[in-house]
Image (cartoon, rainbow, N blue to C red; front, side, top):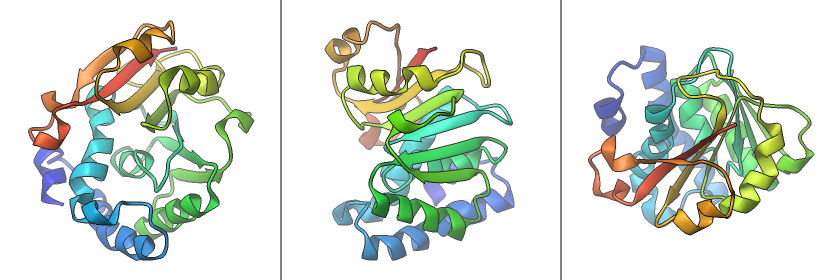
Length: 206
């Protein structure tokens, strides 16, 4: 929990309580459904919570913005972002029912009123959103194909509406195939820990 306060010192008491609650909630759920690798569970706050919050260092969402987390797994990045932005409406989608059960349980346990978990394929959603977030779900050309028509044009945050994607490694070739204009933000600019050396937030506007 200290590592979250290191980079986000202005949290309210309620946000601190919610972030602190994640440890026991994920430990309990992970014992039933393995959504966080057991070998790195002790790095939950570094590798999952703080990694998710790198998106917030790139784009601050406005109150009322609609954010879709695609392939949310156990709730990353949507759960930490929903704590950080309590006035923003998050929808967390995964096609695997047991993963959505974890997100439902964690959201209820932390008291997150602004996060709606959905067991669905993203292609089946009829709603539109201001931003789409995700963490290394699939290759970017495929991902863009899934979500592009779900994003409303406009600006409901510090960047124009678009995709904010957590990814690592050399992305040049993969991004070129999408035929979109991308900006890459090195997470090491925001967080000192060695874990983030090769990790990026990748952004394109709608």
